[in-house]
Image (cartoon, helix red, strand yellow):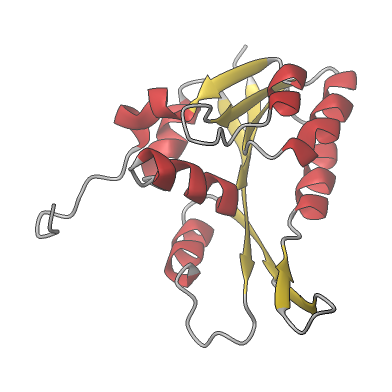
Length: 178
């Protein structure tokens, strides 16, 4: 029987990880790569967007993902004053990812979490209690490591994303400068 899997992709974390490693993700190839491991029941992609940006640099990617098999979850960036007159932003995709992980766990046997954020350790622990395996896909080759030690310890498996580079890297555009 083919394993039923879900991908939960923390877009910001993944972007910073692969940028630090010096490459970009080809999301079509990423789906193909993980599709070799089982039937992808759902591929979630989480990212933040600014409401006041007329055109956000991530918008073309969001649109492409939405039309090509991903369930895209966007969260507006929340800004606040830090008390000293400086504007700070909050990253808040965690609740959406946690709820989706708990809901999809009833329908899959394996969740691949493409994030190294240690805040997701409890999410991994919770879905594991329901019998679902969790594999974290991130990097410890970056400086500092993008995958938290706590999350790696909690996961059933850890995949160093740099080892997938050849199969998921977006090829350079033929006219792009090197």
